[in-house]
Image (cartoon, rainbow, N blue to C red; front, side, top):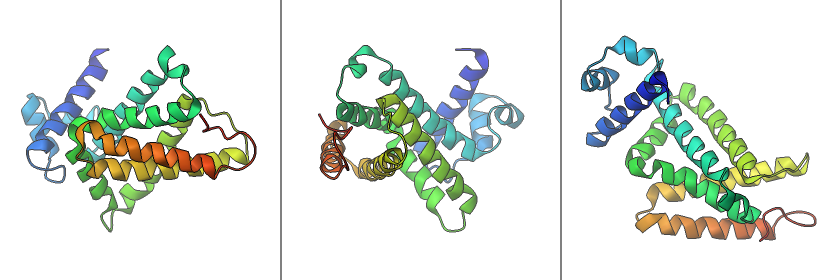
Length: 197
């Protein structure tokens, strides 16, 4: 990892740890700078605004899911198992800061934050596209559009479940996702659903 990437990751880690002490809403970038012994300008070299830290946090989850998707073990799973695993790997990457992650999402949904909400929709789409790629989904239009809509719904429902999940290892969310994928199989159109075991 080069020094610039390492510094960006450090800034994100310090911001998350400070937010755990109070809340994401109350976190200020000058506190992050002070905690690291750097200047605000050095933070700005990596993050133009606090919201960029949220993007970096979700990018970290994307990377974790895609790294796992590159393993031989992952490639030997059925498509439905790959979808289950890639979504749960993404969520597991965020688990250490689940409370702060929930606060980030609530902040985006706050009325009047259209400047956060519109990019959030693009973020969801981007993550779902990476999940499709990682799981090896190859459908073409119009089936691809149905797959994307279905996977987006499953991902969002699972994310909402995960944010409230208090079970060890997010077991309740894992079971919930398994059920969603089975239901999606049942309602899949045409021959040979891509999500069948």
